[in-house]
Length: 249
Image (cartoon, rainbow, N blue to C red):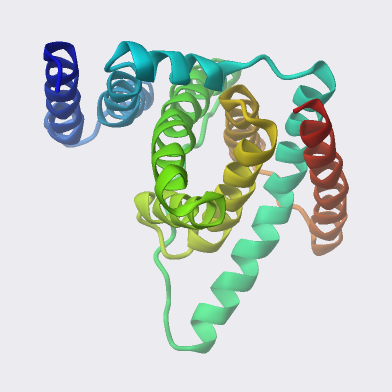
């Protein structure tokens, strides 16, 4: 192990430890909206983003491989990823509803996951940065950039897609949200295999996060018909997205 690699791995571990403990220490009893969003961003950066970046760029050889992950996607792919993410927001509500009814049927009343509810345009913009864009960048860097590549080299793409997606869903620590997070993870991991670029998965992830925040901001309550329509739109756009990404590669 080179000196640079040892330093980068040590800094990665220190950053992860800091990200695990520091936000909770700073939070106090009742942090305000803006401060709580800052803490979300801080934890994502220190716990996930910085460690992943340090490991990916720990040596000259690994740096060259990491830079190859940031190929610029075509404009059509980017647009399809955004449209697919927005439509999946509503389709995801349908998956969550089905999961909730199933858990109730087997005698489990799942806890509602915590949500971010902006009350004005300023709060929406701030949370879009701290709770949508930054988490998307950090989580994709770790899961699709670092873990999926490492698992794929040892077990192959299929195992990497499933294991990375499972870890991604488990990391969010929510029983009710697990099914939709698993589906998102599978979609993003498969998109990484097909498109070979982290930027495309980051766009999808960030747009999905922002769409969820927008629903919370507006207080929208879509009906069953809207959910089904969005599920159909998601199915069409995602199929076309995978086709375009495959053709581009």
